[in-house]
Image 1 (cartoon, rainbow, N blue to C red):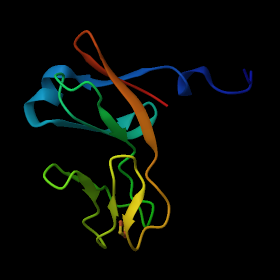
Image 2 (spheres, rainbow, N blue to C red):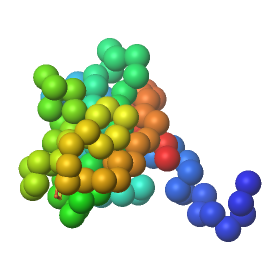
Image 3 (cartoon, rainbow, N blue to C red):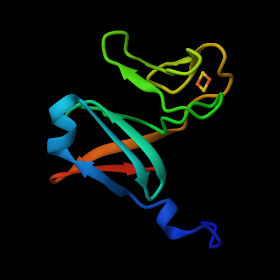
Image 4 (spheres, rainbow, N blue to C red):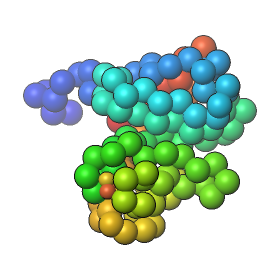
Length: 111
Ligand code: FES
């Protein structure tokens, strides 16, 4: 392991509660220790989706579209899949994705 890397960046971070996530099926924490994080899913899902919702085009916060199962940017219409990959212009770079899981009452995200 690289010793110069800050320990906090690789450790799992609690970014919200399971109750918050289950209420709407998504959880946005714009000031988490690892930066903005948007988690999609509920505690019943086997896999949670987690991304940095900052659009790679000009930095707007993308919104999750549950029906279409994609992230859409409100500013210029870029679209991203659940894997963070670009599906529609003008974005060219993917969203950063994270591993997310439930630990007790917390939603935990790891870089
Ligand atoms: Fe998202 Fe331009 S900032 S499409």
